[in-house]
Amino acid sequence: MIKLNISLLDTPIVIDGPLYFVIKNQPYFTKVVQELYRIDETNDIKLFDSKYNNLKSNDMILITDILRFDVNSSSIIKLIYTDLENQLNIDIETKTKIEFLTNQITTIISDELVDHNLDLIMDEITILELFKSLGIKIDVEQGSIFQKILTIIEVYKYLNKKKCLVFINVSVYLSINEMKSLLEFISLNQVDVLFIERYEMKGFSNYILDEDFYFYKN
Image (cartoon, rainbow, N blue to C red; front, side, top):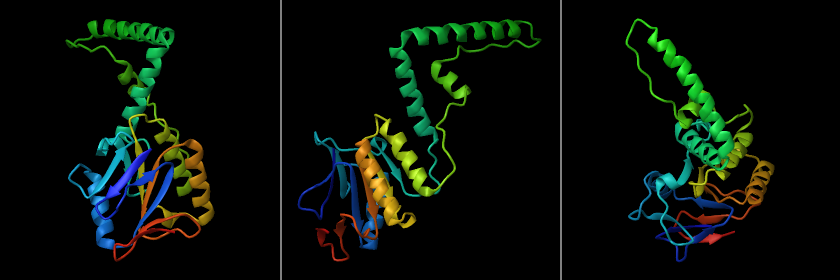
């Protein structure tokens, strides 16, 4: 469970599952988005966990452009590789087998280097480097924006180091039925997702900060 607070609110908003936060004042909306990029204790907007630890930029996934967002970005793939390595550390038998086979390949290539005209050397390959060389990545089907958002949420669910997923202005791409299905999917997967929007979504609960900075829930 994550909490959101800004100086204009009397009490923080609890993000427990999906939360739709509408900021109708355009300059303030821009300010909030900019601060999320470099969120810290001095910012007007703050996100913190149940132990009141402030979230930092690397504690969350911030998506301001859903069309260009790459699920297989280097930062996300690095987290996936780390998770895979931790998984192997539990399965000692499989890890030992991989290390044995990797050492065999290294020995074969090393013998070839000796026979080359140039004086060549090589490093031992690590598990993480092996993942990279095999081109391990998330299988992303080319589909609708709705499907892409579902994929992002599925990926986020398994990134233990990420505490909050933040979407900016994605509702403009979704129908009411898609948004309903999306919110149900988020609740089913028990993840915390914050939607920061300029306009409210009809038919859903919205936390709204209007043009005059009056805050209410509809």
